[in-house]
Length: 251
Picture 1 (cartoon, rainbow, N blue to C red):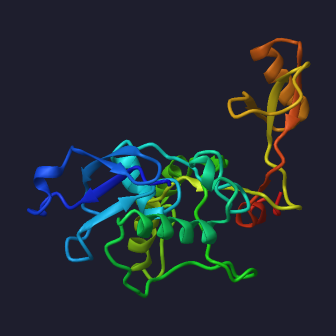
Picture 2 (cartoon, rainbow, N blue to C red; picture 1 turned 180 degrees about the vertical axis):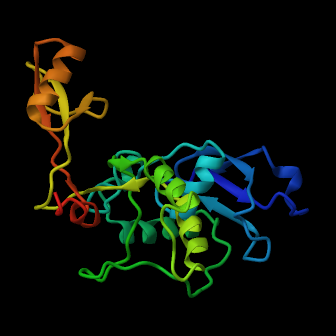
């Protein structure tokens, strides 16, 4: 239901003539493109792999590279949401997979089912397979934070003993990615962000503007300057992740 493309390796002679064409996704009847991406392994299976950008870590990167849509098909309980055909909405992920196979069998679309072993992350408390789920989170620009640290090491203000660890340091710092610092936990340092609502507004929507500030007083000053006086602030409920919080204890 969340597939947005079929990827083939750009050098795979079997599929070169199909790159750029569209195929119709069964059940949802959505037209999706055949794309060229080196993520597809010509030696694995058919050499063509479906891409679900919103629900797989590797597919997410493929989606970014190929400007694909990120379609979220789950709610927070891993039931299918309103982005799938009505017949399948509200069904749990495992039950939905059974129904997809039933549909394929009844419409003579199923080639074969081959058991394989592969690595799937499981929750350490629940023991169930973990599904990547696309939701809004707060990120820190780690690349910007790393710049002065790299400079200090390059100018020898800080040195590594033994020296070989300098190479590891630069590999970490120069290939650093944005850091997701928000967590949906009951306790922690609350994210210093406030949503700006009109006084008549009751709920936060997807595009509700926000301000980031040192405290609520500063947030109100910022928001008043930007949006006028007829507003109210609602603080984000997320808290900082434990690693980020631990860096605050010295203060």
